[in-house]
Image (tube, rainbow, N blue to C red):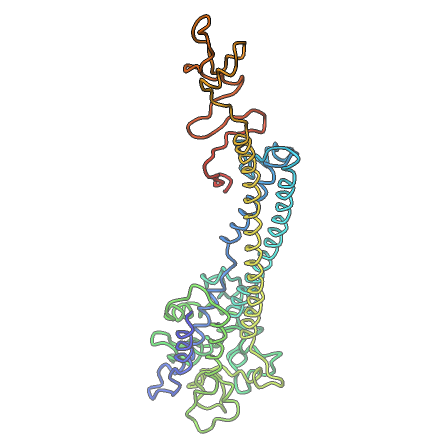
Length: 460
């Protein structure tokens, strides 16, 4: 999210109307807006490591291995059918020719193959660790909303998570309004209190459970009797919860540590901001939602729909409510995964360098063969072109040939240039084609074009 938008969003959430309306309508709407946004970000989750980059790493390592295999003088791997399938070896790929002068290039390809395999193995291990940590972080976000055992991928279906069977995960042991929302003493000791156990529990306290007919968060959501709402009939409030969440606005594609930190700050800003009564007591600073009289506490009675975190925030030392701890733990895990993402990018960069070196080495091996042949052709002795003068110097014996011929009779007979002479083609040779290719013999020879050497056929 753009930092400017993030700051404005937090400001808007934190600055939501805190004064209780005279008509006693929707007093907890600003508080619910913050919790609702946290639930949306938990459902969106953190972005996983890039599968596309992992695929690129695999291709780079495979291309390097292919070059080493097809140019290895030990053809065991080259002839192996499985390798041919894995590396898409057709058998038509040009090879660096055999010979002592080519061995260093082939040895370098084998060395680069080993280095690429090491980097790819490190990449895969780091990728697996980063993926596991992000998955754990996303599951912790789900547990912050729905309690222990909730899975990130199930958050789109509340019927799996808000059920009577999961009442203890959602609301803790023997849940009641006083025990989950704070009652008159913050829900008792932190070790036994259900306050802040999940975001669902807190939203029930603010918006769903309480005095019948009260509308504390939304015009269409009327509070339900809370007698057993936090215990054996936990699923009763599911429809109300779903209806409230449907009015939260658009859900982000992903969340991030900075966005979650900002939302936690917005939540903290709501603590103790919701009172008109002069009887505020010290507990007020630990309460989110409407408590017209903190002395009465968060009991679900009229004008007392709230959550009192005193058992956690007022403890010595102060403790985070459990859903807050889950979110902070998730943030820590994803930050560790982010460090691994830097390592992944570094490994990918090194793989690109190794792959480039392998391609350059392969090209050097093929081009050196062309260069040697070209130099041999240029250094071959050039036959002298015969003239009448050079032919005359050959005398009168058998030397008058190969571009020269006898002309005249008797005393007028002399050796002159043969204008119709054509040199004989060497046995077994072939003329060079117009395209500039030469066909050589031998099992390791190929037709090599004198134009630019293209290696794209080696890429997957």
